[in-house]
Amino acid sequence: LLVLDLNGALIFRDKKSGSRRTSYPRPYLGAFLDYLFLPEPNAKLPAYRPWEVYVWSSAQPGNVQPMVESSFGEKYIEGIWRKETDQAREKREKKGEGRLLGVWARDKLGLSSVDYRQKVQTVKDLRILSKHLLTALSLDPSDCLNHLRFDETNMVLLDDSPLKGVRQPWNEVVLPEYDGDGYQKSRLAALKGEQDEEVIPEGM
Image 1 (cartoon, rainbow, N blue to C red):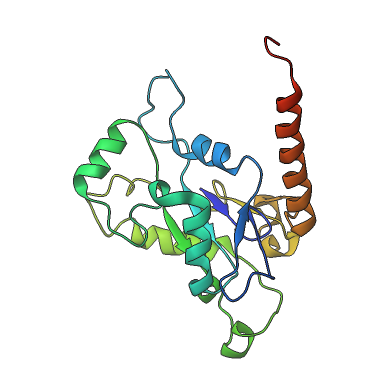
Image 2: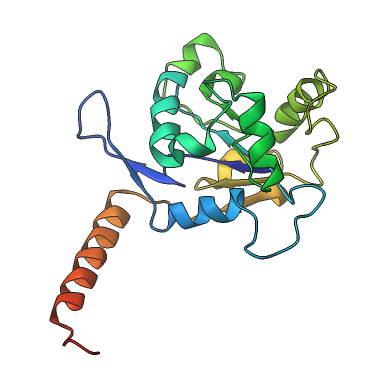
């Protein structure tokens, strides 16, 4: 199970864009998500997908939903806030396509009511998520995922903060933070690439 953070890892959330902050995706996020959710082209489909994907953010639920929607798009979040039809699910499973397994936010960090509203250091204990999934995936015997068993041997946290994974440091991959500076650099690089394409002579 790949557990993904949002702000600072997959996206940069602009603090200057008002109450409804704008989210900017990390460069090549789209290609990364396609790699996670789509089968390898022209390859034989395995009996089971090699991994599943979960989002766990320390932001509040009301902020997490728009971030997930803007970064993942409608396709990969079917079944999260809007139920996926049996027909649609059967069709994509035949093609070997995956979908986001679930989304957790700040309300799942075990914080006190005071800390929940304060900017405090938070920790993502993968054992809590593992216990939740053990129960949730076994409730529906018709669910094609009920064979899965997630624990510390097969869960990886991708986060920009080393302290988020302090409970299981061996399970965390720490990403360089994608912040305002990183966004501006990637934006300038993209603009430069467009300008370079414009000056390439025809036939090259």
